[in-house]
Amino acid sequence: MSQFTDNTYWIAIAHLPRWGTERINRLIIDVVHEKQMTWDAFFTLNKDEWQKIFPFTDKELTDLENVKTDIPRLAFIAEQLQNEGFEVIPINDTAYPTLLKENLKIRSCPPVIYIKGRKSLLQEKAVAIVGSRKAGKAALEFTDAVAKKCVADQKVIVSGFAKGVDLQALDSTLAVNGKSIIVLPQGIITFQSGFKKYYQPIVSGNVLVVSTFFPKAAWEVGLAMARNVYIYGLAEEIYVAESDNKGGTWEGAMNGIKRQRKIYVRIPEQLEKNANLELIRLGAVPVDAYGAVMDINSATTIQAASLVAESTEPYHTINRDIEKEILGLLKTGSFTVKEITETVKPDWDNRKLSGFLKKNPNIKTVSGKPVRYTIQDVIVTSLF
Image (cartoon, rainbow, N blue to C red; front, side):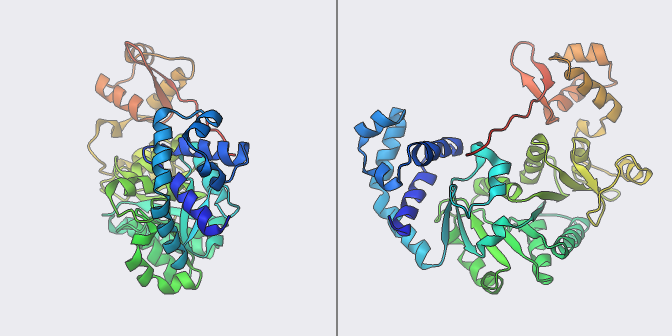
């Protein structure tokens, strides 16, 4: 089977409508690894044959029949990708980034990635620098300093090509002849203006453009949010320049903390309004304006923390000793809010306690009436 034909089938499988990522990955495992079938052989089967060999639901069978009829259209897209110098890298290809599999596992790992540029960058040590589109001066200066330090350490910078921190990370990297991976919030074919702007660093091997979305997908907010997962997934180290207490940067950092990854967060300057300290309280590693790790208990850090004007959520004033007492209690079993209050006797009202229990990534909810809380067990499965 030719590379062109194979790519057509991979595009068809990777973007099965309304199939979750994990379901698609399990189909790939079943077809390619367990049954040792080619996609060409798979798509020559009819509905009855699929039903005999695979445990598909009626909806899944219908979806597969529909995508089978769509193969000619997808072949034109595969041809365009090939003619314009893009590469299609499926999840079982040796060029597929190992770190992405390790970080995202079967549940979230994209079945296919589309790239243009020097693909060996996918296998090099990489650092993600993330933050707000409307980042302040301190956050942008931090981004510049960390990017240049990482380039000096021969590390690739991963960014999402959004305004603010993302573009600062990219520009600072290229300014010192560093290497960068741009992770797109859109289909790779729709990034034509970007390819023109970064033509020289792409052909020189300093920039690799990556997309996980359907090749002709236009930019949209949902894709921008989904893209953040892949930025974090492609990096060994993650630096947060500035985060609100919601949105893509916050969600990505919280997910990283929950997976017990090291998330480095800049200690904010006096009177900055952001959620950086909240991320540090939840388990992120505090760093200074140049990315150097700080001791959260040091006098300098505590002084800075006491003068920071963060968001006005009640959770932001949590006392660390009480927090530790609650976590210690939850390690022994599951408890209701009332039981936690009676045992720990925190100097908090119920609203503040509930906010802490719901926001802390180490705590999980146990369904029932009343709701109970306990420590989250982090369990992740390997991909292949």
